[in-house]
Length: 340
Image (cartoon, rainbow, N blue to C red):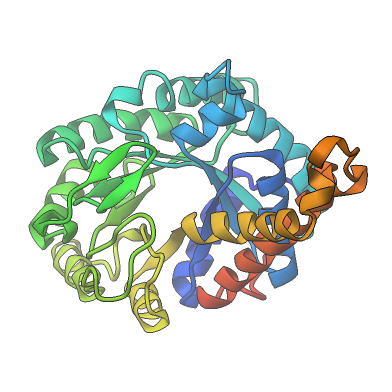
């Protein structure tokens, strides 16, 4: 099935929330990691989300071009062709976009979608993330209001973050402090500024101890109950059960029971990057060590073309990452829930 339409994407998120599951949102940096994500979703019979960060988009454009919009556009167009061959529905999303990259990434991509929609086409991406975690909440919400209005006109769902995800991703560093835990007051201010869907649908990345990257259990204390408190506080004011569609960032190393608890409070999307990066690279390392004399022309020898052909280790990498994507679908309970 082709990439999700705006209507189908909304249905996907509604089904996840009502059904008590969440979609893995898999970060990709190449056509091959995209293919691995699609394969993993198909093997798990799960719909899903494929996303690209600012750094991933820059990489996709070529290491000398380094243009985020070019890379993201190329990925979206390629995905439209290959995803049509898989029996699952996939939404395209752009990951963390901080303030200093809005004009070079998110805003131009939304403009492309506005132009597409004016011609009767679907938007280029189904959702975009504005990451205002590094600025004061008031400024975060002011920028979010402007972006939400523009996204709504482009038939795009916006994602935003309140609180701070710790660790580092694409050069954006989040300190590990009390800001790792979003407060009910933050959530109430968000609902006051943006509404709860009537001004445009948005996803909310509220933080509850999340950290990007790899960390050992116990390094940071996850408190999924923070999400429950947020939903109850805003729900009580607006008379709506679980008013926010929540996103779980920085989940590497999380216990399965913590993931399931977060889903029970309204998480519909969980970002997966660190674990799938390793799952992709590990088989390549194995291939190189096992075929050392073949991938290198050692001591003037000719090597083994079959060993250094990128397809030989690329197939193993795709298989490894696809298996980890399918595992994520099982963990998030989206396996077997595909729409088509």
